[in-house]
Length: 262
Image (cartoon, rainbow, N blue to C red; front, side, top):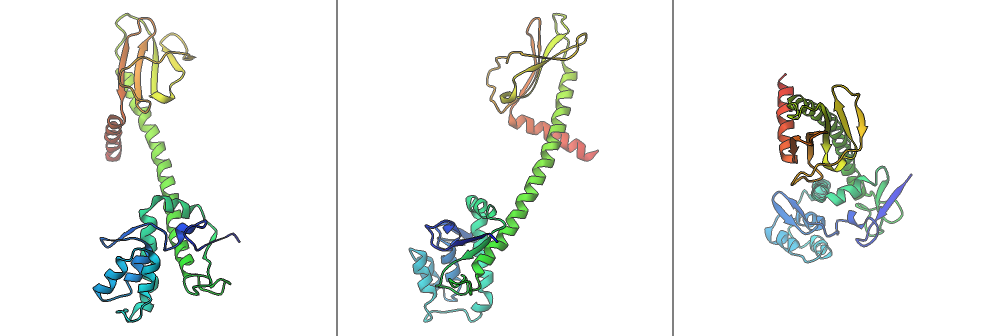
C-alpha cells in the first residue's frame, strides 16, 4: 500500500500541515492558517479568540490554544473533528494548487507522521489515530469526484460545441453569395486561426481536394479567433467573418437556446 507521510512544512507534502502558510476564509472571517482557525474555535471568550487570531505564527497559536487557563468550550471534544474538517476543506477549496497536489496523491494513504501527537497524527509508530490524514483523504475523495465530473462535463460540452460550430459553418457557407467575377472555384477557410494550415478547394465542378492555400491578411485576427470565410481562387475576393471568442460564444448561446427549446 502506497503511503505518503508528512509533518514539517518544509518537507515534501508539508503543504498538508495545518501550519502551512495558506490563509483561509471561514464564515466571512480571515485566518492566517488552518491552525489559527482551529485553535481559536476552542474558546468562548472573544479576547481569547483574538489572541489566537493575532498570533504571528501557527506555533504560537497552538500554544495559546493549549492554555487551559483560557475559556475552553465545554463541548470541544465532541466538535473538534468537525471544526478541523471545516478548516481543512476551506484550505483546499480556496487554494487551487493545493487541490491539485491533493488529488494527485490519490489513492495513497496520507499520514501525519510524528510522535508528538497520537490523535491527529500516527504517534510516530502507527499507533495514533491519524485523524488529520483521514480528514485529508475525505476531502480528497470529494475533489477527485469533482474532477471526474468536470472532465465528463467538458467532454460533453466539447462534443456539443463541435456540433454547433459545424452548424454555424454550414449556415455561413449557405449564405455566401456567388463571386462577382463569375468563378465557381473558391477556397474555404473554417476553424481556429492558429490551427489553419491546409485549406479546402470547393467547386461545383471539381471534387474537393486539399490545397496548400494561403492565409489571408485580415487585420486584427488573433490565433484564438475562429475564421469563417471563402476566398475566390480567381480574383481573391474574400467573403465571410472573423469571430472572436466573445462573438462566437454569443452565436453558440443562441444556437444552444434554440436547441433547448426544440
